Image (cartoon, rainbow, N blue to C red; front, side):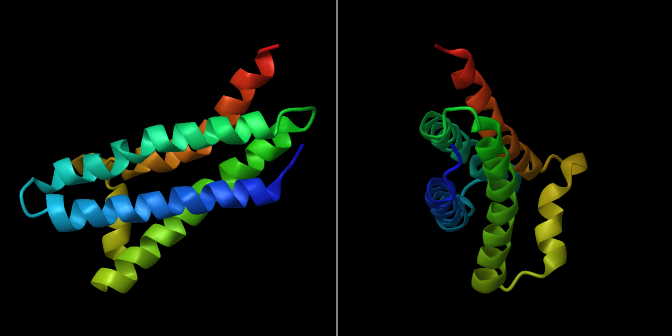
Length: 134
């Protein structure tokens, strides 16, 4: 069963967590740690939380249309998290769009693309795992 309200509520929880995590990384960790370490922190800390939210979403949307609900979450969560993260950097630090795009520079070790990819894979993956259980 598709539950857009549930998908939106879980996304709001995820977006709030990602922004607060970025804030902690920027304010408390950035002055003491190297830039690459802070970037890895900003990616690795939200992943278990996102996995938990994906499992909650999969559990609540079980049924014949679980894949539709999982695709909705897989499209909404990464896209809107990118937008919220961009707005956070733009409003708080007045960063230019090019500075936000530098977060995807995997050739110098930027791990942000892993978080976006994980947010796209987690809802269908959790839905698939729960649909196989009886």
